[in-house]
Length: 165
Image: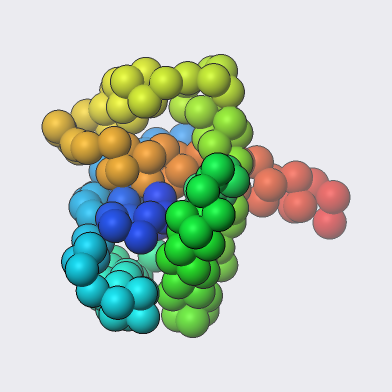
């Protein structure tokens, strides 16, 4: 199953695609969708929408996973991030792809084993689990981490649902 992981942001949204087959994970691709800082908010949101739509159409994921965002101290920044997050959540949904959401602490716990891991630990573990990803930035690592988390929790949830049925 192909999983798309997304790390929302207005300036840059990280994305990562991996293949999950049973317990095996294989890196497929990752990158950033960037917006122009000087562009209007609607233009930036449209850029995110187009960029993410292209990724969904290219990779045809079976599911997507998005990292939940924490509340920012600056209300204006929090609002803009929320609007970007809305686009990030809606693009896969508009393509008929189920979307899972995971708190940052849950992603960190799934990848590193502790909910308070720092960015360096997360990046190192993502590169350990997906060595083919090579040298990647924090946003790509976060996107791949949420995809890995979804592969782990999604498989457990599926097995639990099958067992209860």
